[in-house]
Amino acid sequence: MKKGYMLLFGMLLLTACSQNETETNSVAETSSTVETTTQFSESSSSEQSSETSTQSTEESRNEEENENYPYAVNLADFTQESLPDDKKTYQRDFTTNQENLPKEVSINMKDSDDFDKAIYISPSKGEDLAYPVTITSVPTEKITLIGDDGEKRDVEVNTEVKVEEEKENNDSLQIAGDTYYLFYNDEGTITLAARNFDENPGEEDLDSKNMVEYVQERPNSAEANEDEDTEESSEDKSEEDETKAEEYYDAINDAWQEASDYINSIDDPDVHVQSSEAAASQEADRLKMENPEDKEVIEESFQNVREDKW
Image (cartoon, rainbow, N blue to C red; front, side, top):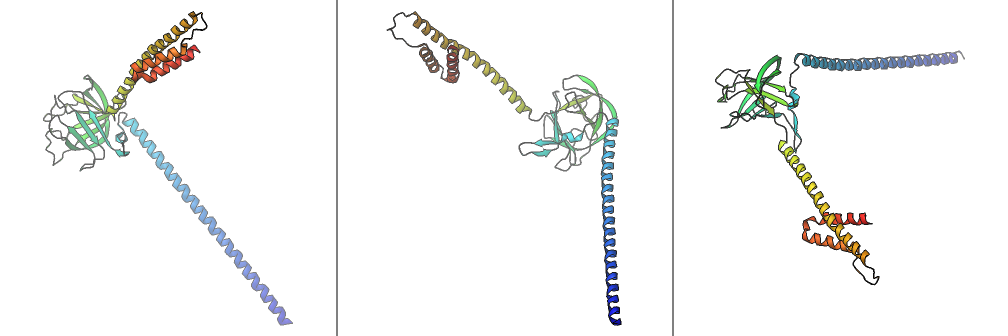
């Protein structure tokens, strides 16, 4: 009997120890979960704080650049979609109306050849010349240039285009070392202020008081002009059609009225004559035979007469 009590007491003690160990493990697991959650929360908060700080720093830097370089050109404006494949290009072409000068100058921000950034100049004779360039923001400078309209004006600039020397280039224009400028013109497009190759050739020092304006060439300008011409042509044709429609309407209406007047003048009920509408229809058919290119306009005029008469 005594041995039975001892055995029962041992089993109860073992059960109590096992339960205490389970509770201890559960508490440990809960503590570990809370710690992990806390670490994740702190990490996530740190990342968000870092992103906010980075964004704030970039905004502050942009505001500072706008204040320090108020006339700077955003080089992202050189990026554009190329139709029809929708690929991005990083080049802008600039042209001038002035005589005795290269007619076109291009700047590529991601040149596919040997240069990172490059300027291409198309002389009046010979092949295009390419030079590497560096583009940086500089303190505000004032330059004088001959505008695209032929008038001289002073402009303030912050974006400098430095023409670098290229060993494989023969530099026939002798412009390595030149400093040109980019700025936004009154139309909101980009202007390149370049050397006046006519009055200030390359063998002379660059004169920043006698530069030439090269204006950004608008994309699809030829198509735009074509669309304008088409629109004007459509307007002219519309006015011409309106004039013809009035003439046809009057002719058909006169035929209707003449037939109506004749019918009203007949006193004998036994006399049968063509109806007014039939007379108008006959006149419309005659006009269509004489003017087959205006069949639709004539038919519309006839229907307008019918509506007005009825």
